[in-house]
Length: 292
Image (cartoon, rainbow, N blue to C red):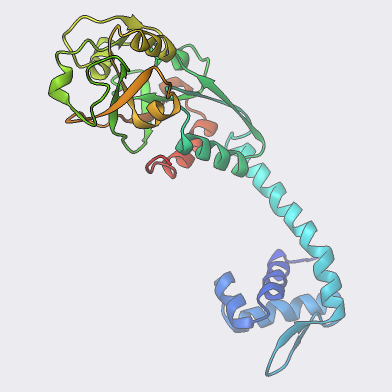
């Protein structure tokens, strides 16, 4: 092991896959002659040929085949150890608690899966956040970050990645006059009782999700709202994925035009930003396309 160069081993492993000096150099960002030099140095260190090269082909010698079989798992474990150390240095090990509001759609679950694969030393916990308290769990330290409905205008919270918007739908009882409609306008909702979130949701946030001046019940949870909708006590705005997820026979969901899209964003407390939060934010940003 004295003087062993990791670059020589990496060169051999890539060459064993490509069986081509030019392509090996391209993958390692070195010249073809440098590949030959690294291989020659490794063969001198071992004391025997590992690769046979003719004008027509490149192949491994029997010793090269045996060396590859023994080296590959050891190298993979070494690389994994380095990645685990890097993750620990970035503060990605431990537990990451993620809150979500409404529905954990394919974008969120995909981001969680991708994050877990990249950071196996970090355990991810998922917590549902009450409809009427979008920011409380973050402030109380019950979650490290949360995926919540926008808008967010809280000076103590950081707004991170924002997911692509979804068209809004209105949930109404199947007995409601809107139930048979294919489409509604935003103007038609201004005179419709829209069930809103109760406190402690901020007034600006409640108004954004129930843009109507007609008195209507206030609820703490999404299920409370849908139960009142089914009882024909009012209508309720929901994004398309949430409407699809919570489909039920006594409630009709009608698309609405003329309203801003329903948008989700990741938030965390300004004093609670950690390496885990930053890494998950990067992962979520890569999954910020339309929901499946």
